[in-house]
Image (cartoon, rainbow, N blue to C red; front, side):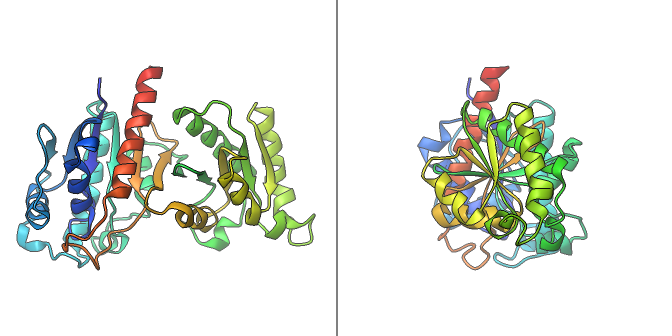
Length: 318
C-alpha cells in the first residue's frame, strides 16, 4: 500500500503553498503516496491561479478555513497567517495521532508571524513534540551525502554550551534509531567536540573531556558504534567522504552550516523522538519572492520523498 501523508502549506503569505503545489503537480512525486494537503482552500486556489497549476486527482484537501481571502497579504507577515500556519500543523499532527496518516511533511512557517499571533512557538519540532506528549525530541538534517543530529537547536549559544552528558547519550541513541529508519544498519557515528580541536587536551576548555567523552563511552556500552569527541573543523569533511554515517553536532549552527553549504536544495529536516514521522523543507518562507511564481520546489520534493521512505520502512517493520 502507498503511505498516507499529510502536507501542510506553511505560512499562507510565504512560498509554502507554491512549493507544495509545484511538488505535487509533478507526477513523479504525486504517485509516491496518498497525499492530503492541509491548508485553506482559498490560499491553494490563489496559488493555483498564480502558478497556472492545479492539484492532481485524487489528492485530498483538508481546509481548516482559518482565513478570509482578503486577510492574506502575500509577502507580509501577519497575525492571521501565523495563527493559521500553526493550525495546519496541529491538524496534520492529529491525523497521524489518529492513525489517519502515516507521516507529515511541513512547509515553512514564519516565527515572527506566529509570535505576532500571541502563540508560543520556537519551531516545528518543539511544537509537534508538545502535541504528541513527547519530551525528548531532536532535529535531524539529512541529504544524499551526510546526516546530522543536533544535541540542541533553538536556544542561545551560551545555553547550548552547557552540555549535559545524558542528553548527549540520548541524542546518539536517537541518531542510531534514525539510521535504522533510513535503512542504514551498520553505520559509524561521529560525535563532534564543542571547543576548537575538541578542546586540545584541555588547552581550549574542559567541556569535551568532562561531558562529551563520558557520553561517547556510555553510548558504546549500549552497543552503539560511535567515536569522539572529534574536531568539528574536520569531521564533516570525513563524513562527506563516507567515513561516518551520521554526525552528532553539539549546537544548531555547528550542524546546519555544513549541511546547507554542501546541498541546500536537498537537505531535509526530520523530527526525531516523536511517535510520528515528520519531515520538512529546510528553508524559510521567502517572503521576498512569495506570490511571484519563482519558488523552487526541489527541497519540498526531497522532504516528501524522505517521508515516503521513512513511512514505508516503518510500515514494513510493523
